[in-house]
Length: 480
Ligand code: AMP
Image (cartoon, rainbow, N blue to C red; front, side, top):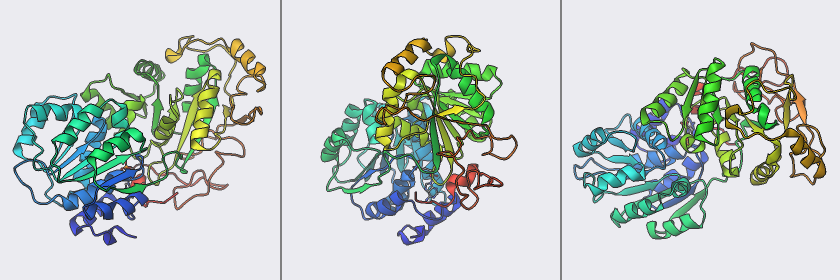
């Protein structure tokens, strides 16, 4: 069904067209009619599914006429980046309307946000902390509110905003429409939902546990000491367009960035200790191509929406399996294609198993052809903040566990104690667009996929199909 059949007004259909969208995504198809009908909604959908438009479009359609008494729509977001992005989305979709939207978040001065609120705004997109400040000083009143949206509710509660969120809900008029968007809906969210929503419709887009099929992903086992060397080798041998590297810690992110800079990469860093202006600069620079690499932590990276991230590298395996799906979802967004590599160390069999169980599939373990796994590291034992683990002790542990000895084997765990087959691959020749140098195993998993109307991933033999970036993720939505 095209957008034009969903009951949205012409100005918004034109806004959608200007974004280059042709067909609604599944969450848009299912959520837009519910929201247009005025009902409450709980939608389980993660970022990357098109959920922002799923609420922004019908909310723009229903927001009514501008009134000086205060905002009619409030959107709560867990992070500044998400808040800023969602505001941009409202402006983009509403470009042919007279929408007035204001973003309210911490990390910047109060002055501009205060004067925008005082000048009168229709839609406020806010993080809970700064919003509470404005509510307490009574710069902002919610008496006129008609629609309340909580986006990424699970993350908002994880980040400890539950008290503020409940307070804010309590300050909204009882007569209102309320929408919850969350990747998962655990019991804590059900509890908040019970007091915030009335007979909500439920829309579930069952991708919370799956890795987008347009992303190929693999583990790269390596010793702690050689992690940074493997990272640089992967970057060298991969023809990436823009690469997002995840570190578990802020300190680790800074270290990785410093080392990559000294290896002549253009690098941005994004984590919670960076100032707001540094965060904006990093994100803008990464989007514009000024930085080819961005090193980020999970929280800061939540919701990063950069069209055409070609590669995600988990320098550190994520602390929980849900983050694995989320991090990998930063590439291959909407209809685009991407690759994701995760460096794993011999002590991480448990984490590997948890991820594979969570996503319900085994992830291939690869060796980078031509990389010397055994020589001394070039950058010393403290590589990018890693703890030193004696490789001998690790090998011993694995032999005892019956997983087969030798470097890089026996990390599987989830496979009935069978030694994991490890594949190696030769880097592809240079200079063939975006795919060719992509490290790939012989035969499986990363084998070239059939080209799909110009978005091929290497092409089925012969010439690799050219890979497009940038505008691509705003093209036709293909359900996977
Ligand atoms: P979201 O899940 O809202 O973060 O959206 C993920 C990405 O998909 C963003 O880059 C959107 O611009 C893009 N997108 C959203 N809806 C569509 C659509 N109907 N067709 C193509 N791309 C879309």
